[in-house]
Image 1 (cartoon, rainbow over the protein chains, first blue to last red):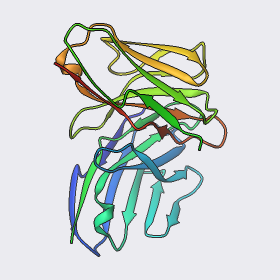
Image 2: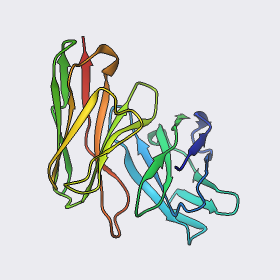
Image 3: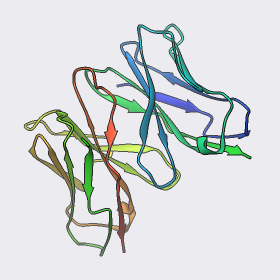
Length: 111
Length: 113
């Protein structure tokens, strides 16, 4: 089955700086890569996703990149704000089958 | 709004008791999942169901059972609760065509004493 690894497990940045979270996956058949944000005590919520036929996708301050050859995908957050503080999960898998979650990254944005 | 509803939101139960966590959804999704989250850790899959007649074990199914009563309802049972099952439990749904991302319920915080 698919194995998704996520790094780093914790990330601390100064407000206004950029944050990058990186993930790798093992199954070359995986074709769907969503990212979830979980604020303290709340449910994970989808913030952005990317399909395997696209190399990059951007939505305001967040962007995701996908390198199918290297089986890497990343989340980039620019101009970080305190409300970006949360746990972020990368996910990979076959959109028609199962998705596998990474272990999560706790992002702390210091004012 | 179409959503995923979990009941109860919080529950304290005693060791050895049977407890059921319920999940219902109005999103019209075929696929439903139960995840467990321990403090500071990620999401671990307990069981999943791709349609009413389909039940599959996840990575940590021991000590749990599920029932898919209808397309919209998926229940998780702890037959004999133990303290290390204290955790936050999430139900999630996903579609098949065009809505592959998961929608999570608000979670059930379960404490076994």
